Length: 433
Image (cartoon, rainbow, N blue to C red; front, top):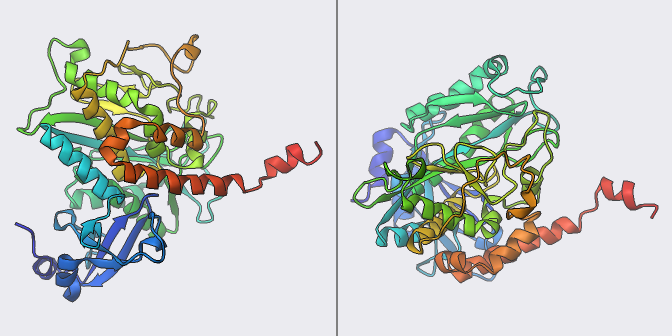
């Protein structure tokens, strides 16, 4: 039974609702709706002009109505009179086929029909920086290997603990917070869930971290590579596939590393489609300064540069940490929470259905692997990943060709805008040729 949001508002003391949808580029768009107006919004949706967001529309298109999902409701812990709602855009009475949350729901429903439930968790890394974006906020955070640094972590205790307290209040099951590998960088972990809920929570987490950081006079960024000499922001996804009856299909006591054939076929599907997946996992120009970076100040980028998998080895695109899950290390902080989940679910389940062999597991250090030229490499830039997506049949089939065409169109416009931008590097290196 669908919850009556007007009743929920009265019960929880909510005065306003943020009805939000995430556009193709991962930007969260919202309308602030007073509680007395929520019945109409719950029935018909909040109106938006799609062209005003990163959606494949024109000013001539009719209104897009975003209908909130009551199950996604999150009451802002730092402003409890406001409730946040993820929503699904509709136009002319039909779901907008290239809306990212709609895409994810379509993928997950297809997987469910095939007998599979995809569950996942995310590790969303971020930097705490000065408000003008020029440097990290903590001038004392200067260790060449700052990962897990207790002093730097505790200097940000007020911020980190407030965010973690919010997650506890929301019953997300947060279980650890740490200073990450770059100066000024942090990571916070919470329990896994079904992929749609993970995507909703990931979307809200980014908003929450940025909002609480602002309340502390700071700024948080999930940009993939905000500082050239430091490790970039990854967004590792831990994934597993369950039966609709509630059994994890990945463990197998007699399997290699304790994993079943189902798990390895899932890995095979993701690896087989990695170049195209990069268009969603690494969706901005800056992304490719993370996955193709030279060693950083700490000595390693911690990001993949090859389409390979290993055991408990963080130099590969996919890591097998135990027999319950696999960790896909491709995505970065700019990834759209809905599209990255949809991409991994679609290609992984396709791998299961078609029994795709992931090939030989490599247990070497891929950063120093002598025959690295013999293994497939990730795209070198956004344009290469978009070209790979344009010829990928699996993602076109699962996402729908209309979505793929819209995504490539909008992202190529972004790429063209980038190529028209002149940089200081060009002036230094080409002014006098």
